[in-house]
Length: 435
Image 1 (cartoon, rainbow, N blue to C red):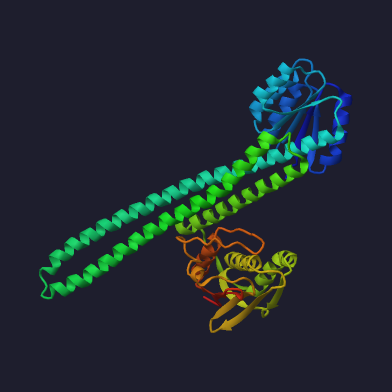
Image 2 (cartoon, rainbow, N blue to C red; image 1 turned 45 degrees about the horizontal axis):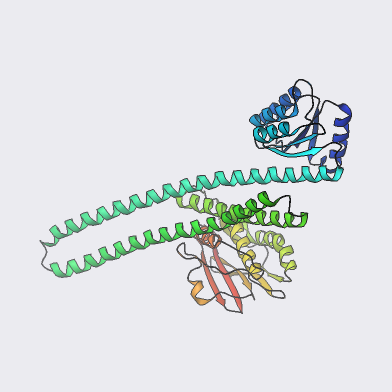
């Protein structure tokens, strides 16, 4: 992948040389530092970068240059690359010129010559971080809009299905009336048929209620992190100059946490949506599950050690199963992650396997906080929401377990959960060993 570019524009070669030398010290490893002596050359480079798909997070420009001043250069660059952060570095710009750069090019910051090396580096680092955070948020916004469209289509299809089914039921009722007139035991027949019709209508109503509840949960889970993201970003925008570096880092960490939460939810929703529409292909093959288990344990070993949790492994070698390898790997990752999330320091997690006829049981056990009996019934339901946090305040959406159950069932397997409060939980996956 080509490196992103920091572009410096100044008609004085000595200034460009100094800038490039200083910037390479802190940013040269991850970014290419490009320099040009006038606005025309700068616009050519910017156009080429955009055409080649190379990111341009920061442009630094001098105001006083022949032919084209710095604020005019920034205005033209803004039309080509509006999300690039622009910094004016000059000792002679007046208020009107700076105002023009702010209004027409969204000037990120103005720094006077001669510049302070530390201030320059901090400003550029913040500008780069801001550029890529905004880029991530834009990408997530696009994903969210696509998801909303998919959910809307799914809702319309479901409503259409309910309407069609209701019409069919109504038609069946009419046909039954005509048919039952010809039968001797009409009362008994009507009673049995009506019971089936009522059960069918109740099932449809429950499906519709489940759909509405699921959409309500999704809306709530999307709204909270977005509200947090907007609130924190609004605060830093209004109070940036009055906020010290330590507070800024804490705020950026909170923004990152909210963005990760939104991304995780969107990713799970897109996977769930693809499953419902049958877009995810299942590639069931014969493979050794012991290797997959070991790989996923290694992924979470550091997280377990950080919480002071001991992972015990009791699995046999060369355990052959017949399933989709990637789906089964995702299931095991989810269960190990949950076991760590809901365990305290000095607790034990055990992963073991057991062969039962033509199936293999994979058991993930923990000695953590356990699951209340009333919550066990809600674990794999789309119309219920569990609010339990991990022992270190970890949050989750609950969609992971729903996806795991669907993955297991699509691979011809089953799942069972056993749990007691303050004793721990056992998640038991049953997977076939052959076709």
